[in-house]
Length: 519
Image 1: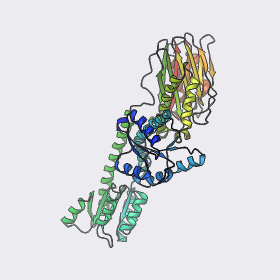
Image 2 (image 1 turned 180 degrees about the vertical axis):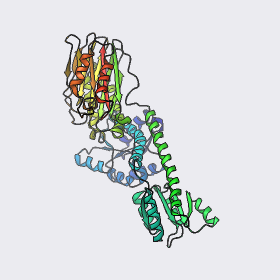
Image 3 (image 1 turned 120 degrees about the horizontal axis):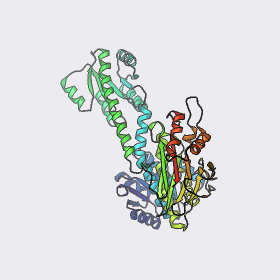
Image 4 (image 1 turned 120 degrees about the vertical axis):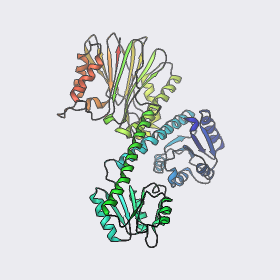
């Protein structure tokens, strides 16, 4: 991915600029640099830039003004911007975010922070290309009637056809001339435009050319409605990407039928597009929930995950092997539902993995709370991600000592089944939601597992799911099912089946659960 990513660094301080460029190039990115806003703008317009690092204080134009200038162009409204600045007041941050900035890097530049933010933001961009397009399709077209724009200077034609289209179940916008039609098209972005050919001042040809010059409107299917049926006019019309050419003498019901055929084709194309986007989302290399659990001597590890209504959501699971003896098990839940939450899970997984690598370098002894502390620091400093809160249960399992460390961030806690007492003991970490506060007060709870002891962590979709009578499953039922099944070889299957039996397989949110059993 990095070889295909192009980053622009704008800073009038040559030392800072070269430092950033050098470290980004070492990571495999293609890097462009500029010493002024003017030169930076030239590069943006010439190259296919994926991310901009921009100094705030520059002589020709400050970074805030430059970001606003770039954002005025529709082509660059989603281009990620990260400010490099010594200005860290809340007023400066609010001003930057209102301009559409994505994050901040403080001077002097911390290279670890720089690379972490670069990786996270580019992952967000990658997912947004799938998520953003799909969300737009869903919101715009799902369960909505098609909208047709009629443009004609004949009020009788407008009346007859509008009544016919409304009767066929379509929404109908009407305009008496090309100028009105263009304004309505920009305002409503209709599904199809049906326009008269012969109109005063601006004729149908000119109207169509106006639409083709607008990137957003040029793709709307266009049909000419006219009394002029000369061959040369028809041929010239098709040169302007006209879907059809309907005579004004055609029966209104037949006009509606022809329009309906075009709209059916549009619907089919959109359905195919949604399927392709779903496949693209499913095939993205970094999965939020692994297909398989790791093999770890001395322990049986099982997870179960069902997304809400079959759509990708905010729950994520990850397993990271620290060394031959230690395994990190992670269960998280990003606030929100479906695609909106799923979009952010990739950034959080990236932060978790990066933080764990940092802790491994800095710490001689593995510590669950130190991992969460580092993750929280990274998230809190991220201007975008810090607005989205996440719960995390983090467990470090040592296969040699059978010792387990648990730390949580606003999660439901850990349920520990003790084979000696035959009861479940709940453990609750005091840690805050990730991103909620700069100091999350994370702690580590340490346990030593014995033969047939087991542990469960889960997201709130489990306990908050209801049966047909509206009763929540709750923690008590879950604890009871764990205790009842402790002697069974397939304890996890029993716990899962009890939950499915209660809910009927209908859930109110993503449901995720991980079980770890000592063999």
